[in-house]
Length: 317
Image (tube, rainbow, N blue to C red; front, side, top):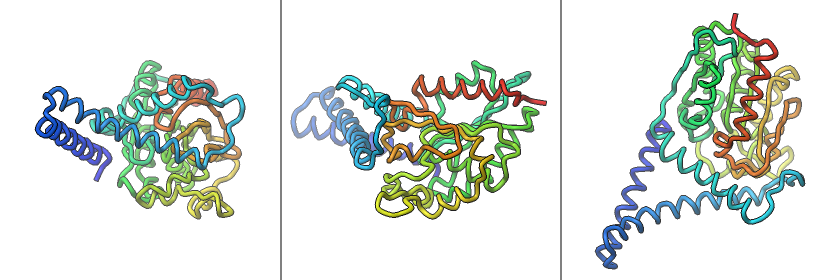
């Protein structure tokens, strides 16, 4: 089952639950129809809000120390962090991703290297709804990939990436591609480079990728979730797959990576798991995991990194 179909099914279940609660409120408690509608929808939103809050609580249990300059101070700032993450999660899972499919946009005459976008665990191409308009505005050709099967082997996604890269390069006439990847997508990009080499890579920009695993992956389903697991009790903490991935890389491959991460990530814990030795590591504060793909500060950094690659001469033939 694809992520789009799964999310559509979850939305249907939520709608039926809201309807059932609303009918119960009207027929059992004598509420008006509008009150019943509010009760049904409010109950679903409350459950989603609690799930989001629980993610923050679980990530706090395994959190890495937060540097002074990245701490979120005050109730207002904490509420803004939570609201941005909750809003991003609701919009992505209830609107953009259930309607999305992989797409390609070629800007003829562009000299900027094309961009391939890789989403994270349980997502699809709809995750990039806020970055795509920026790429279009900058005249940057791009393509997205839906990583399927949903709970498959991360190494198994490498052929999908290879085909997408070859197709994008052929369509643009470029010699190298920039990969922008969220969460698990960053590991997919690294697995692809290990399998196919780095000759076609201008840059890999990862957002909130668990390069050393995340403790919350223990609650995920599928082989890909198992490949992202990390523990605070064992030494080394990374699972065997992550260790093999690291062993298959050299310094040149690591130097191609820019890892952007948040010290308040509510899915990647410890948050410094996103720091990749030998890569360009850029930290931000006050941003949740899903919100990394929508936050203006983060997207500004992504666009700056793309501009830097272009300025270094990674252009089309």
